[in-house]
Length: 193
Image: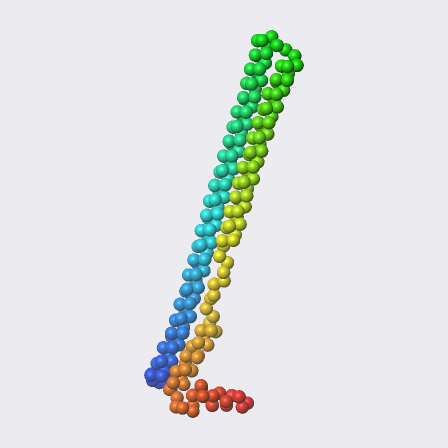
């Protein structure tokens, strides 16, 4: 054990120790970077979800306003129809007119009122269908915009392998020719078995 610590005091030992420390530090930095990337990815996804939720709320408000507008228009049309019918009946009575022509006029007014209500309902359905399409597009954009990429985490075995290679290179740099690991003579010994 004492010879190990003595070898660390040599320039080659110091270089090998510095390489190991550098390898371990790189591993730790890569871990922190991966954590930061994961946090940024989660934040971006949360912001996309929040934006989507706000857009969905806007669509809900728009739908409520459309229904309110259609309801008010329906009431106005109904009031106008009642007024027109009453006015026609009063005018016919004042003129002393009765019979089929008055009934035809009243049926014409009723038909006009029904057509106006039908047009109001078709317009409302069309507007609600458009908002439903927008709502669907918002959901799709939210899902498609999510970042689901895999964030590469550092691998301890790769870090240890890198440290080992660094130590071996330092070892080779401090060996005379013919005794270096890169020469293959030392590794040939393992192949003989």
